[in-house]
Amino acid sequence: MLTSMRQIGNSRGVLIPAAFLASCQIEDQVDMQLQDGQIVIKPVRRKLRDGWFVDTAAPSKAVLAQEKLESQDWIDAPVADDSEWVW
Image (cartoon, rainbow, N blue to C red; front, top):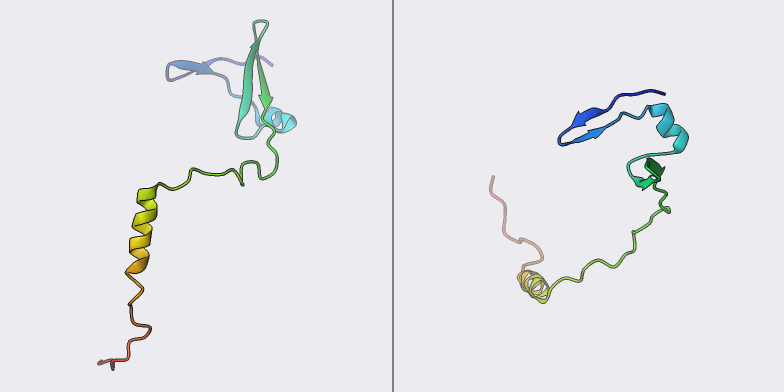
Protein backbone atom coordinates (compact mmCIF):
# COMPACT_ATOMS: atom_id res chain seq x y z
CA MET A 1 0.00 0.00 0.00
CA LEU A 2 1.45 3.35 -0.99
CA THR A 3 0.75 6.28 1.34
CA SER A 4 2.08 9.80 1.92
CA MET A 5 3.88 11.33 4.88
CA ARG A 6 2.01 14.11 6.71
CA GLN A 7 3.39 17.01 8.70
CA ILE A 8 2.55 16.76 12.42
CA GLY A 9 4.17 19.63 14.30
CA ASN A 10 7.93 19.27 13.84
CA SER A 11 7.54 15.57 13.01
CA ARG A 12 6.02 13.58 10.20
CA GLY A 13 3.63 10.67 10.27
CA VAL A 14 1.43 8.33 8.31
CA LEU A 15 -2.20 7.36 8.78
CA ILE A 16 -2.65 3.66 9.42
CA PRO A 17 -5.95 2.28 8.09
CA ALA A 18 -8.39 0.95 10.70
CA ALA A 19 -8.36 -2.49 9.07
CA PHE A 20 -4.57 -2.72 9.59
CA LEU A 21 -4.92 -1.70 13.24
CA ALA A 22 -7.68 -4.22 13.86
CA SER A 23 -5.77 -6.99 12.11
CA CYS A 24 -2.68 -6.34 14.27
CA GLN A 25 -4.77 -5.76 17.43
CA ILE A 26 -3.23 -2.32 17.93
CA GLU A 27 -5.15 -0.10 20.33
CA ASP A 28 -3.65 2.88 22.19
CA GLN A 29 0.06 2.16 22.54
CA VAL A 30 2.65 0.66 20.22
CA ASP A 31 6.27 -0.39 20.50
CA MET A 32 8.23 1.32 17.72
CA GLN A 33 11.76 0.19 16.82
CA LEU A 34 14.30 0.88 14.11
CA GLN A 35 15.67 -2.38 12.66
CA ASP A 36 18.04 -2.44 9.69
CA GLY A 37 16.80 0.91 8.39
CA GLN A 38 13.12 -0.05 8.73
CA ILE A 39 10.54 1.22 11.20
CA VAL A 40 8.84 -1.70 12.97
CA ILE A 41 5.61 -1.01 14.87
CA LYS A 42 4.29 -3.71 17.21
CA PRO A 43 1.22 -3.73 19.46
CA VAL A 44 1.78 -3.43 23.20
CA ARG A 45 0.25 -6.43 24.89
CA ARG A 46 -0.63 -5.76 28.49
CA LYS A 47 -1.82 -8.28 31.00
CA LEU A 48 -5.37 -7.83 32.19
CA ARG A 49 -5.40 -5.49 35.21
CA ASP A 50 -1.66 -4.85 34.84
CA GLY A 51 -0.57 -2.27 37.41
CA TRP A 52 -3.75 -2.30 39.48
CA PHE A 53 -2.00 -3.42 42.63
CA VAL A 54 1.25 -1.52 42.27
CA ASP A 55 2.12 0.15 45.55
CA THR A 56 1.64 3.86 45.09
CA ALA A 57 3.79 6.41 46.85
CA ALA A 58 3.03 6.49 50.56
CA PRO A 59 1.53 9.75 51.81
CA SER A 60 3.96 12.10 53.51
CA LYS A 61 3.95 12.69 57.25
CA ALA A 62 2.55 16.19 56.67
CA VAL A 63 -0.40 14.79 54.73
CA LEU A 64 -1.09 12.19 57.42
CA ALA A 65 -0.91 14.85 60.15
CA GLN A 66 -3.34 17.10 58.25
CA GLU A 67 -5.78 14.20 57.76
CA LYS A 68 -5.59 13.40 61.48
CA LEU A 69 -6.39 17.02 62.39
CA GLU A 70 -9.29 17.11 59.97
CA SER A 71 -10.74 13.89 61.36
CA GLN A 72 -10.56 15.26 64.93
CA ASP A 73 -12.80 18.19 63.96
CA TRP A 74 -15.74 15.78 63.77
CA ILE A 75 -15.18 13.99 67.08
CA ASP A 76 -17.33 16.42 69.14
CA ALA A 77 -19.95 17.02 66.44
CA PRO A 78 -23.52 16.40 67.60
CA VAL A 79 -25.11 13.19 66.35
CA ALA A 80 -28.44 14.84 65.59
CA ASP A 81 -29.91 18.31 65.58
CA ASP A 82 -32.55 18.25 68.34
CA SER A 83 -33.75 21.80 67.78
CA GLU A 84 -37.12 22.40 66.16
CA TRP A 85 -37.22 23.46 62.54
CA VAL A 86 -39.02 26.69 61.79
CA TRP A 87 -40.59 27.09 58.36
